[in-house]
Length: 400
Image (cartoon, rainbow, N blue to C red):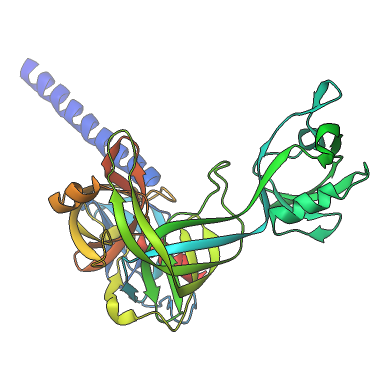
């Protein structure tokens, strides 16, 4: 009898542990897996544990940008245990021209960005007209007294042409327009009026082109937004240009400091930049782009990413884009911007760059013969590692 009781206890404990493990997987799946899954026929699989039936054969065709209604399907653990429902959308495969070339960025803002404020000494006391008006760092000034402004020099000229009057300042703050009243102060020793703020209207930089989509004529690059260096806010794009560059040198990354690719801007325009988003910059490429220098790759679905060997296609010298070995170490399906962690393993690349450097943002990641993603950020204090975004997410941004 004692043996039977002990056996029951053991069996109960094993069953409880099994149930706990199953519930653990279910909770994990609900938190870590995406609510919407794109498939190309058949089933979708995650971590070789969860499967999802592809559903109907209706499809999304990115070339015509036509969508169909989503179909709910049950996510299954080990093919037999239902977890929860996911939205499933069939999608046609899409091939793009993958680049890996460095390019120069010239960006002009839609309005001017407030990048700083300061106190002003007037008659033995300090005042800050901008702060008193409610203007905050990161605000985008779109008009002054109903006059649109696009350049910092415009703001300076308007505020200097003042007789002690107040101005109606319209700012864009987190996507909402607000109207504020600003009264500049007169500074005797400088013989001018001051508002106590710094503004910026443009930026320039270097990045890597991820791909050209021949079906839409769109260039996709960077994989992350262009942000203001002082405020961290996404630069509101009025217009911009992508231009050809010539790599002149590379400053190596180290644990203490991130290196960079150094380039000269050339005159050849590659694209007009139209959108600065969380997932990169996008624009219409020009007829001067030689797509024969690119390589066609099919865009991988997010669930096709797997830990292990991959390659990156990037430019670190005058010879143009080259393939280097790397590996995907982590995958995050539900993080909007950091979908993968990638580690550089190529000795030649490490010797020349120290790992990931500034200017490599947008570098294509190739795995199992498909474009799986693009490098976006280096991990601080460890230049061998960086974050990446799914190429499928960038393709969706092209569609939008």
